[in-house]
Length: 219
Image 1 (spheres, rainbow, N blue to C red):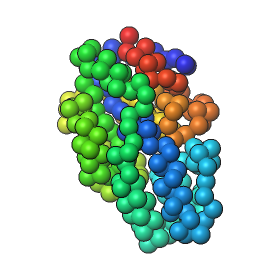
Image 2 (image 1 turned 90 degrees about the vertical axis):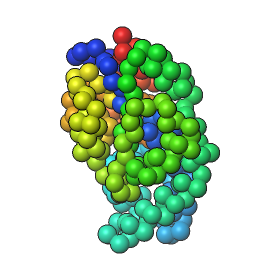
Image 3 (image 1 turned 120 degrees about the horizontal axis):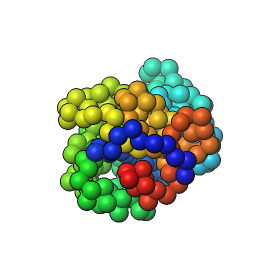
Image 4 (image 1 turned 135 degrees about the vertical axis):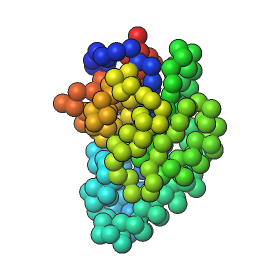
């Protein structure tokens, strides 16, 4: 694992959800392939998905060959989320994540979720998976368009009186690293999510290849 020095002792851990906590990679690929097929676009494998996936999500759809004009993008996005939510409870947390959540809680640190998922859908996922008591707060976006999480991150910091210099933010995409930088957080990028590990090169984030490695950044 690459290393970087946290500026001050961490007292708050903020997690991305999909692909970081939730093992939904296979479901995501299967769901987008249904949408692609319905629109006459060739399906993708996991490798291409991890190479193309990014935020804002409209750019990911465009790279896959979908029509991303305003009306078409809205239809495609709604269809994707409808299909995804029908099966999301089939997913579980990544192996090792529950133990890391327990260890962080035992250290007395606050934990939050900051996700690009719509707030209502995020709440459904969190509650459906029995995770509500794990977190001090759960923050999603106001729509399903998969845009930036920076504004919601500001809300989280303000709502809970968080010192950004004492936050460790954990996510699986370059956008998560960008969110951390914009909000003044230290960042960990995880290798098991929706983007290939090499895509984090040059972005200045620690890369964890196993959930247990996250705990070493709290010492």
